Image (tube, rainbow, N blue to C red; front, side, top):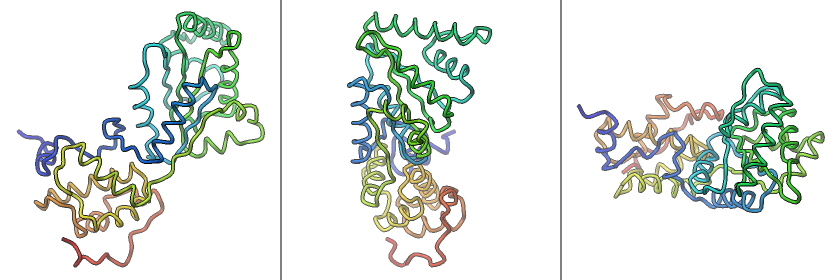
Amino acid sequence: MESTLDIYTAHFGLSERPFSLLPDPDFLYWSAQHQRAFAMLEYGILTRAPITVITGDVGAGKTTLLQHLLRKVGPEVRIGLVSNAHGNRGELLRWVLMALGEPAPAAVGYVDLFAQFQAFLIAEYAAGRRVILIFDEAQNLSLESLEELRMFTNINSGKDELLQVVLVGQPELRAMILRPDLTQFAQRVASSFHLTAMDIETLRHYIRHRLAVAGADYEVFSPLVMPMIHEATQGVPRLVNQLCDLAMVYAYSKGKRRVLQTTLQQVLDDGVFFGGGALGIRPSPQPYDLNKAY
């Protein structure tokens, strides 16, 4: 039996679902913001910056940029990706070693683990490879952990640093780094960028881009719904995906091949879109002029 998802995509003439919440580099829309963020990410890596910091609100597209970066790196780079690390000083080092594919037995003490880590960095350097540690959701790191990462970047061989650190996280990460007691850490940040939400014009291009990648050959969303989407999501990409996906499900259930104002308003009125509540947005008591729908 044909799955509901297959019916959904076939209904709109698509090859795949255009507004999944999962980070997918194939759907990456290169807004001016994302171009600059990725440029700073690449700049930090190519110039061997000790620490690179990319921040942005929840759902701004940071993880998608990371996935795109991971696709581009060659065999001369050894990357350890740590997602949502937490814990004390010794636990952070274990997270790092495991991300690099190194054993980190619980019975081994911190001194021995650090010696193992340092030996690993030296061996990779001798083999002509750079080591980059990437921390996603880095706002969850403690002040102690950030200071430990700074100490990691002090491991060097002559003039060459053996380790680069990339921190990707929410705006709280930026605030943490600017604390007076993290001055030494901040001085090691050689590349940084903060991603903001999309304006309405960028949102229009974003929606059309994702639909085109999924195989759309016509304008699925009426131009009149774009201001409604922007108001409900405040231009946050993940929330745009969520609302657009729900709107397409509603349109499909009505047998419609276009998303009109009436359909989007029903999604909002039914309360199935939770993203707006997370942003503190209440549905407007004044409905949109539905007579303008086409």
